[in-house]
Image 1 (tube, rainbow, N blue to C red):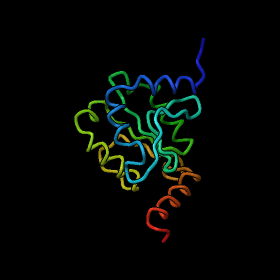
Image 2: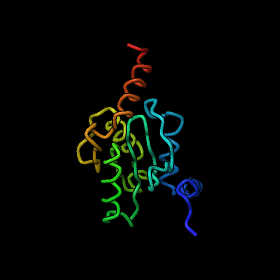
Image 3: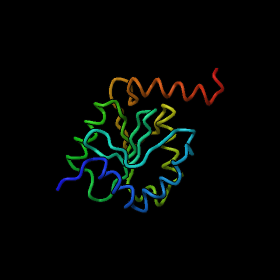
Image 4: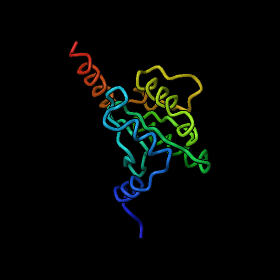
Length: 146
């Protein structure tokens, strides 16, 4: 019996890895620059570890089983949907969570740090048309509407 994508996402949220749980604690409740992240987000037929829809950014945490052709196809598909994809190894989070958060913040600010595993999506630089408009509106609201 094959589970639908929403059920699979729900199961993955309940069975998060240590690295996922550590990063989620730092991203939830708009804790990173006021950006809203969701955990184990269903996007098409994929489940992204973390997603900031307003910025069109997917953050994936990879263990030793990753770096295969399926990850490349998944990243290409997400890029085609307008999502930028940022990947970290699980041990990056467990050993240097602050550095991972700094890297995520740099991508959200539109100035990714060098040496990141980041693939910008679509012609809109990883944000998609709706994501760019939502990001501009959210930034204006945070600045007080200027």
